[in-house]
Amino acid sequence: MVSSGLLKLSWAKILDCYRGVNLNEPQRGFSWKAYQEANINIIVFIKSPICTESHLQEPELVSSTDLKNSFPFFEFLCSNGHSFSIHKAAITLFAAQMTELLQLKAQCDGSSNPLIVTGHGLGGSVASLFTLWLLESLDVSTAKRQRPLCVTFGSPLVGDKGFQQAISEHLARHSCFLHVAASKDIVPRLFITPHPLYTTGLTSQPDYYTPFGTFLLCCEMGCTCSENPEAISKLLVAMGLARAGNEEQLIVDYGRVVEQLESLIICKGISQLSDLMPNSLRAGTILQLEAIGLQKGQNQQLQNNDFDNLIKNLEKLEESCMLSKRKAFDPAKKLNVIKISMASLEWYKKVSKAKEIGYYDCYKNRFSRPDKDIDRHKKLLTNYWKDIVAQTEKNPQKEPVCLRKRWLLAGATYRRMIEPLDIADYYKTGQKNYTTVGRSHHYIKLEKWLEEAEKQNGFSISKKKNVDVILTDDSCFWAHVEEARIWCKSLDNNADASIRERELPRQKLMEFEQYAMEQIKKSAVSSEIFLKGSSFMQWWKEYEKIIEPDRNSPLIDFMKTCKYHQYASSGCLVLN
Image 1 (cartoon, helix red, strand yellow):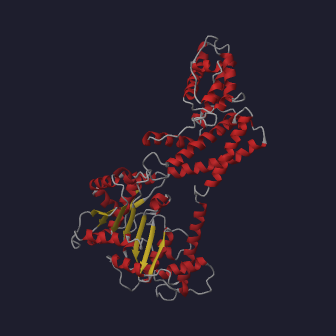
Image 2: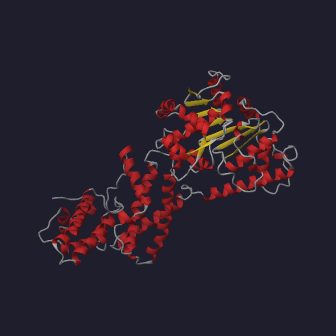
Image 3: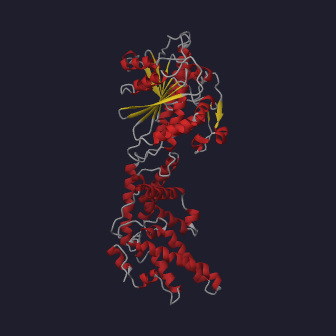
């Protein structure tokens, strides 16, 4: 950010925006201005310093419960069960100029250029809220759309721990915020309680202000970055203590701060470290503190014991952060393992077909050891895609199509390969009504997202012409077959029942006939459903015994005349 010139550019636009504001007069709302530089759009939010000072005397928070009825525009942050609170002064400013912000948001939605949203002081708080609002409805499914970058200078903290968690648990939100805070600037640490510096625990007070996003902490000696909220709180407090007795400012010239950063060599302190450092984490932590002007024995307000405690706390926080990252779900890292499991299932499908039974019934009956080995691959794939769906549902997108095309297609292949195996397990235990009672949530979401993408974006999965090797389009096809077999059994066991009692099973079987024939006409089913050992052929044998001699339908004609033999070779239904 420093070397790219984006920090310098952002601050230059903030200064330009201030030129149109009388800094000595109270300002009713906030000011904003839009700029276009080359291929970058920049939106600046500012608030006159005299008004900022008065607003910062009021650290009151307003809860999401109170906002729900009066100002529900950030209700999406509660989508994962979160409750949160926001700085009342910031959200009041934001709500007061909602009409203007709606127009500004419409302009942003209509542009494909990269966007920087920036602000200073309380204007930075408004910039953060505006960026969050943009992210909630931004459609980045196309390559031309990028998420905005929010850069704030000397901004006060915006919300509590719940607010920070709602943002930080989504990389798509968390990675969009950079907050620049200078050691001489009192504003960024105004709402932090003083105790986090010395506490031995890893969490700060949950009901008070908590940082979010990435913080760039600066002083005359250098800078350091952190995205750990507890570590940021401790560092901000330590920076304040280190400057005790020195001048602190409400308005800081961040242009000068950025210039200093550009001229500094950030790694200059490495050679000055003692050779007795116990590990690289300790060395890195000390360098981090030195970069913001904190050195053992050189700050009167920081006793040596306090300094040592600060180092230990920061190390614990870093270790905790690294552990969380290791446990975090990363789809890309598991991709090769997933490919191996899918390849194993493809091979299993091929081998099952050679047995004239099909992989659905082969798995259902579990004849051999390889059938049982498939359970391991099935479990791995299911856990993987359940995690994908869970992470996607947390995505801050408002648009219903949340996965990109390649993931939608991969999800469809997974669903069509694995769901039949879940259906086999389900009906083997004697249960009924899989589609309405037993179907997993992640299958429903994968299917729904694919359908929405096909409607909105006009793409579809290209079908292989050879139905001999395709996967059946409807991943619930075998559930419909199993239900049809249950209805056949019901009719056969109640041959002496009244016509009225037999009407429901008859109607259900006729509906299945129509459904199956539609799938066949569309070449949407694999030819393996016609293997002699398949559950579909078992259903046909059972059904053929109980249908009336004069009953006729397209499917009955198709089956009785054995046209299904032609289906695999031609790839389509042959009608006379």
